[in-house]
Each structure stands twice: as structure tokens, then as C-alpha cells.
Amino acid sequence: MKNSQLYKGSLTTIIMKLLQENGRMYGYEITQKVKAITEGDLNITEGALYPALHKLEADGLLEVEFEKVDNRQRKYYRLTSKGVTETKNLLSELEDFIRNMQTLVKPNLEF
Image 1 (cartoon, helix red, strand yellow):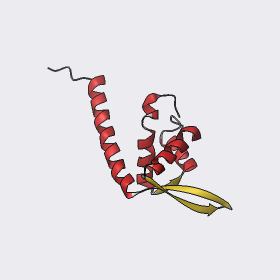
Image 2 (cartoon, rainbow, N blue to C red):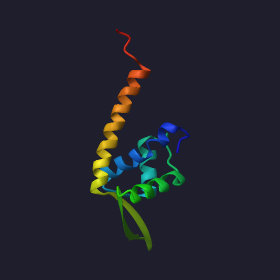
Image 3 (cartoon, helix red, strand yellow):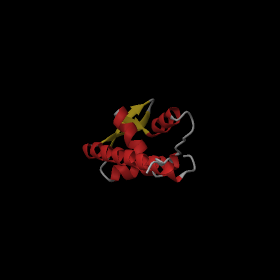
Image 4 (cartoon, rainbow, N blue to C red):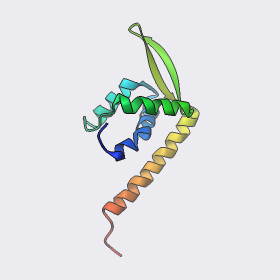
């Protein structure tokens, strides 16, 4: 992942938003989707992704499905109903954060 605390602090939200949009995804697919969406500007490493996925699963926000693909077991992640609700909350918080940061970075000079 790009060396920035801003991105690192947003990893959970990124994962959950992608799962909200795509239904279910496997780990490598998540990394490639982020890379494609950001045109290579943001790369999520396996070392960052899998601990985040495991924590979300342990917190009851993700469920796991296994599917055999090319004689291998592939692990797919999907939001639980609790995860769907939490995703909405995280996205709302992120929108508020972005709005506040825009205000701070480019304040309205009118008083």
C-alpha cells in the first residue's frame, strides 16, 4: 500500500466499499480492483490486506465462502448484514471527514 497514513487508515473502508459494490471478492481480486480504480496509484499489499480481512471477519462484518477454482480452494469474502450497516456508517463518516478536510485545506475566506 502506498506509504501514507491516510490510506492505511482507510483500508477497512476501501475493502468494505468494494465488497458492497461487488458482492463477494477474493483477496487478490480486491488488490487488483484497487490498483485498477486508482490507475496504479494505490497498491494494497497482502501484508496489509489479509490482516484487515481477518479482523473484519473476526468482528462479524465479513463472512467467508470457499469455492474450488482450477483445483484450488479460493476464499471469497462477503459483507454480513452487520457489515452492510457498518459500511454505510463508515462511508458517512468518511464523507464528513473529507468535507471537513476540504474546509480546512481550502477555507472560505469570507467572514
